[in-house]
Length: 505
Image (cartoon, rainbow, N blue to C red; front, side, top):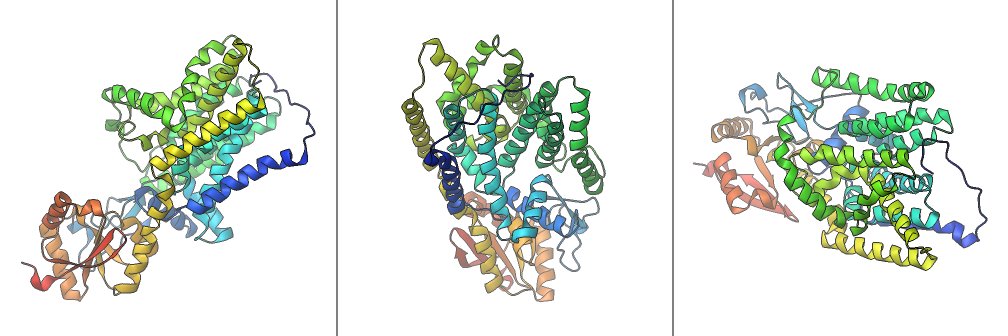
């Protein structure tokens, strides 16, 4: 049982050959699914931010120089003129400072040394997605759940549209789930093998490197570790290298040890967000984890049988749910429940424990076909919602970024200057073009850029997503960048425009 006492390990059971191969076959099929729909490209703010950070680390750098037009220093223009998505400017407006944490970029950089940059992002995300399922299996077994129940838990996670969505693009949510779960799991089994507190500390440090708010996982880890000073020492030793890296990076990049690239975020947390977020939880958690997850509310009923174990599972879920209850963005879309992914393994195990207890109360013994039917229902439910949210098109959608930058490299002169917003991170990663943010540009500043480019014989182009050229947004674009723009091409839904200074008013 998942208790502070040493867990009991069951003797191995001899299984027919085909049954022993089933787990490997299931993981292989899931890996193939991920490979078919993976879209690990430098795309929007998060995706390009992580990959640009990985490139910086590979070069031994923490920051990057701005691509500045000669004669137009950043100090003389609006603050974010030369700043792509995923970065912030330094005080002197000479260099770009990463916004996003370095945990995921570190992993991608390491993989790139083995496989090259083309395949590294997809492999890192795919391996994390598989590890997440394996850790749920191990956690369920440690909680005393039989193999059939454990596989139901893994299936709940594997078919979650949210888990799939975050596994198929360069996002930190699935890695956050993996490292938080690994930290709690290794801390727990360290009660039998003390030395395992060392990898628990390493996993916790990596979880924080991936996402600073994963420090919340220290609550269940501390509850598991208990009062054993040996385990605490090993936990601290395991976490020390990651903590030193985090502190050193913060000091170099931001000038302070205890800070992040997100800046001052306190205004994003408010008591006023709680009602809407609670409703959001009630509506969408049953969608992304099947309605079975509501059974987790019955966890207190198991308190007498395993009080400390249930306390750890409950604390693990609650620290994340309560923290993001106050966050501005949590309730804005179903996809923002991604912040709660690190709590999903505990929520799933709690659900299964309550379900098994309910069956026991009614003196019902689960038959293999019951579990098979439940698995089929979970699979059908997850696939239907994933198709509803177009989850399996995310890879194709993300690929438009490298396709667009490839078009630009082929069709535009090397000295072209590009006005952009959504594609700025991709432009930094895939090209050497100089670019500026049209959404940060007042007309008078753009006229200075246009004059400087005309004097230097450098043409100006723009890459725009549909949402940037809808009627209202297009009016805003014209208001920012006055003059005549001619559409010269498109890559799927991304249009490319040329600025014609001779016809500008």
